[in-house]
Length: 461
Image (cartoon, rainbow, N blue to C red; front, side, top):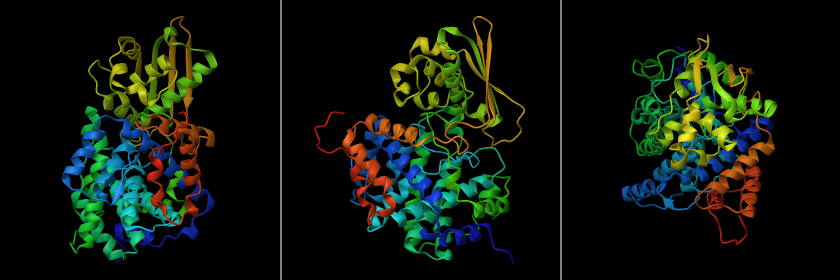
């Protein structure tokens, strides 16, 4: 009798060893751990952060783990929930495009909280656990062949995170499957929040992180759960994602760790916006195009891109909606000269000039039939003098085919640290960079979270 999909995946996960990770993979893991830490620090600036922390404290006090940027101590599930939400709440966290999974938001938040609570986790152990979790989450996501209906980043992220915790604890395959079954039974999150552009979209990531630790603790306490959660009649590939090819995805995993397939996000918007924004930056640089020159801009893109960011701007749109609106984001690029986290602040969303310019940008379906494809894309800019400028986008900036340089990555990290409600100064940012760069040499990762909290240095920001 052949092994179930879950048994194969868990066998793979628990067999991983740091010594078997090649230098390219370790470097990618450290890069995206660093990136996610910066994005999580910056995510503390979203106004709901204070209310969320207050709610979490009201649900139960604890000294298990800390929150990004403020250093407040919480129970591990609460710390994971807040930090996962902060990583994802500005749409600035990395993404595995083929899986349509944000692999680090749930995973890094959960594994940091779990590691702080457990204690004495080395940098090499943490790196390996993240690698395990990312491989699991993105392989499940990559196996799917159906369009998004449930919110895949939350579901896959939680299942991956549980495997990362199981690896750190040295669980057996059977114990890990029990924890995964309980997690699967607790998960939720759909694309409805994305369609409506509500704040619950990012909170689905937070809820998934909290559920992952709660489920893991229930399994540790002896609760049993379903184990055929991928292949069963009500399993992931039957109920949640109804078209899949797990054998092909598993075969791909055996040839390359999936962290090497993850894309940076150069802009704090839905990834689907990035191809068009990247192309517009190229045309601005080549032709000096200004907002006043534009008659109409059309982004020709696959169905997923149109579905995710083809929405129209409105004067009443919420921040979460605007981050998923290509028209608004593109207009912002021309008006502000960049797309930064403050471009989605409330006063800018209501600006009539910005909204009027946004009306000139549209997304149109191309002839791509892949429901999960994000590229290629093409932008066409019609100018007021009737000139037509075009730019093809075979690979989006930040993808493995067009990766951010080390300088671009660090510039993003520094900007994130300085945009936090409690900004880090230059020396504190440098210390955090040096520590995460040397993550594989740390005897204990407990100092990572405290480094996200500003000290008393009077150095100018």
